[in-house]
Length: 215
Image (cartoon, rainbow, N blue to C red; front, side, top):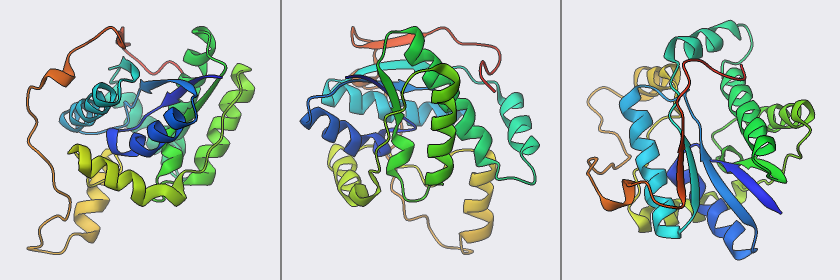
C-alpha cells in the first residue's frame, strides 16, 4: 500500500512513523495545517516535523498555504457546532485530494494518535473526504501508544507544543487553565537553523495557495 499520511506536527507523527516503518508500509508524510496559529508556531511545528523526517529518512510533502482569515472565519461558521470540525474537514479533504491526484492508494492522519483530539470527529471527517474523493481512508487508532510516541519525541529532542493549534485553543490553554504565576510544563527548545530544515530529495514543497482549496 502506498499511503499518504497527513501529519499535524512532529511529536504526533513519531509513533505512527515508527509503526508504519516496522510494518513495511510505503508512506509519505504531508504537512498541511493552516489552522495552526500564530504563524511563528506554524513554522516551529513544521521545523519539528522536518527534523523527524530527516532523522527517520521519511519522504515529506510541505504545503505552506496560510489563509488566516479564511481559517478563522471557517471555525467561527461552525457555531454552534465544534470549531474543530472545520479544521479536521479542510485538512482531510486536502489530504484525500492530494492522495488521489498523486497516485496514492490511501490516506490517513496522525491526528488519530492523540487522545486530546476529537477522535470520532476526525474519523467522520476522513471518511467523508474518502467518499467525496473516491480514495480509501486508512483508519488506525494509535491512542493506546501515546506514551510511546511521547518517549520517542523526547529522545529525539523534538519541540513539543503546549496547545492544539488554532488561536482559540491557544486562548483556552492559557486563559482558562494556566494558573497565575505557574510556569508551563512543556519544554521547548529555541528554534535554530539546523541542517535538518533544508529541502532534500525526499522533501517536496508545493506551491502556496491564497485560499483554502477544500473548505
